[in-house]
Length: 326
Ligand SMILES: Cc1ncc(COP(=O)(O)O)c(C=O)c1O
Image (cartoon, rainbow, N blue to C red; front, side, top):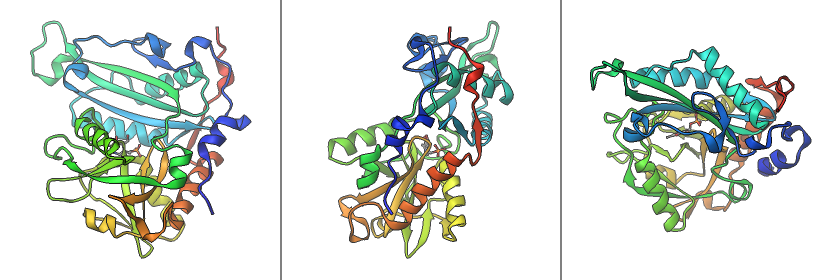
């Protein structure tokens, strides 16, 4: 079995073809007080989301016109917002309506649907540094689907670097709340690319594996699957992977794991909304399992993930006929 060319299918199969849309929305659609072409969306420079990274966000994907696990993403977003004392001005019903409207404006069957709530600005008469004195703001956008690893990278497997950067401590910024504190991940990513790797994975201050920029990590040893139990975002793709593994009769152990275990693994992969299940070829130049390319169980999981999604599993179908471009 080989890794299916998901990107090629998205770009060529008629069921993935873009629905009619206003050309102004070709690059995507955004919501910033109103729906507009993505290039026209702007946020006020004084919003604390911009100035202090004071925000919670989430991202869900749509493929073949089916939004995957929208309710799970909305629930996680509500939990992230509550942890940061942010209030979404819209309830879940209205939030999904806006997100679906954006998808229809862009006409995209395969897309990345992003939204956030920022702290905003101090309300008139509000008390500075009192969380409830700010006018929290909602912003969102939809752009054609983005892959962390495209078909060719997933087919050869990613070259991963164990980063010298450590993940921001969970007692500083809770990584289970999806947040804007990305500089540790971003700088680690730049370093990994400078040094010839595709992506870094970061450990915590105690040397335990955490996560990669925008992705959770899994490895497989003797047909048992391992993933870190703390210091990570509880990824929806991570949860999906655990469910798929159970369906295949595989054991998943969620526990503290270290970089050496990853290097000695038979197989490994990353999981993310932005790419699904992404095979790892090597870690710090050690080829996993001694054989280059995606492992057998990783390939099974990768292909099952997309098969089930395209069959409509946990999907919310978008009705594009209810939107007529101007
Ligand atoms: C830091 C971090 N970890 C993990 C993930 C994967 O989460 P999900 O599978 O819900 O996309 C993301 C997603 O963007 C992320 O930002």
